Image (cartoon, rainbow, N blue to C red; front, side, top):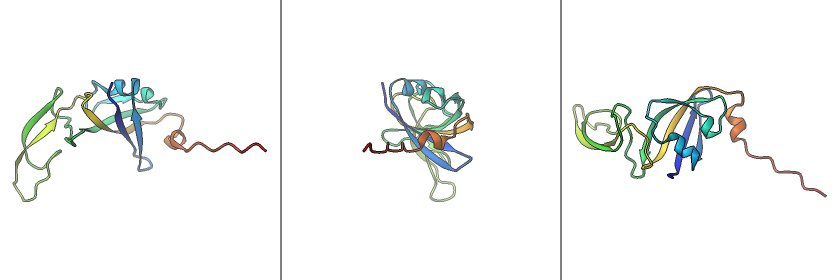
Length: 134
C-alpha cells in the first residue's frame, strides 16, 4: 500500500497540519477525487468532514479536479493549475495528473469543511512528558 502525506488546512485558524497516512488511512483516500468531500473518521478525526483540494505525485506533477479518470495527460495550458504564464497570452504543453487519487501520489491537500467535537489543536498537541518518579 502507498504512503501518503496529507496536508490538512484549518480555515478557522489558518494553520495547516501534516499527517502521514499509511495502510488503511492511505487506502481510504485511494479512489477519491480532487474536489470530493469525505468523512475524516478514517484519518482519526471523529466528526470532521474534509474536502480534497489538490494532490501531487513524486515528481511534483499536480492533479486537476476537472480531468476525469486516473493517470497523466499532456495538455496545452494557459494560466491555470499546473502552469503560470510569464507573459500575456502564453500557452505551453504540460503534463498534468487526473483527478482520481492513486498510489502514485505522494501528497494530498485537504481542508476542513465541518468540525468535530475536539479541535485540531487538541489532536496535534505535543504529548506532555510524565513527571519523573522520585
